Figure 1: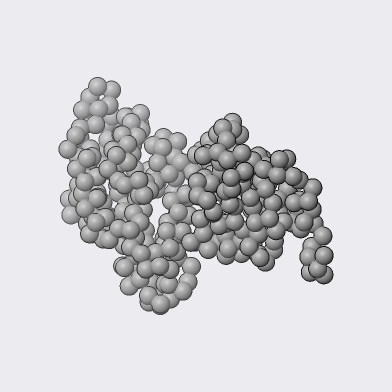
Figure 2 (figure 1 turned 45 degrees about the vertical axis):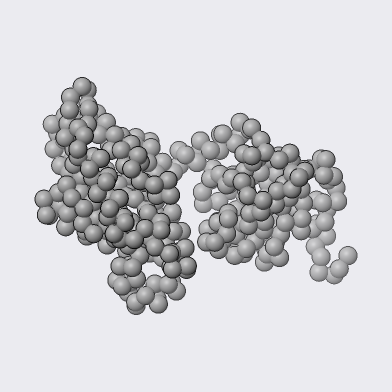
Length: 311
């Protein structure tokens, strides 16, 4: 054994045979975060090789400063799944042992920095349990859109990718017009029904790659990766029509609902960033600034008479 080799690095591999530790390959195998910033988050192992790290380009991106940019990798083999360390600074542990490469058994715990991921293979009720925990912590219970916390974290990741690789990115802020009057006239239950229907209609229009969140009250936000200002504005107009052209049905009554939209993109963010585009690309993304740019457009839409898109 080399002088730099940790005694426990080889113990996991030595004391487990493939038959004991190897997990049968299943289409729905996954890693679930059980300790970290996004408890319950599920990472599907649907590729032959998936790198874990804090670099935005990693297949399994984890926002944890204590792990390496490319920390470890999970590989799918004919006999199961294997976890390998990628010469990380703090090492990778599986079931409390530092490892270089080890087969994963169902339920194995992978520790990278301060984050712990649990490996689940096959049809597993525990998998469903963690998926439900994650859903509850990231979605708005009334509308089933994502919540503001998830939206801001997701947008920061998308902005980091956009700024690093020069990709397009747009954000849309939407607000239901005269919502307070609607609540006062029809009651809060009717208001809740309108919010649910609004979310459903928006999600029918946007792409699968877009993300809808309830930002607060009657305000919603959409993150649109790979979208220019023009394409995001076009999408917003489709959403606006989906809301305004068909009445909402509440307790058997038809209610006309409209919404206003403000659209901003990463190009505007670069121009408006304090210190200029170079500073924006160098520093940590500021989602609040991009939201503010879209919000200003939203206020302009309201001031111009509502029920419109301003980009």
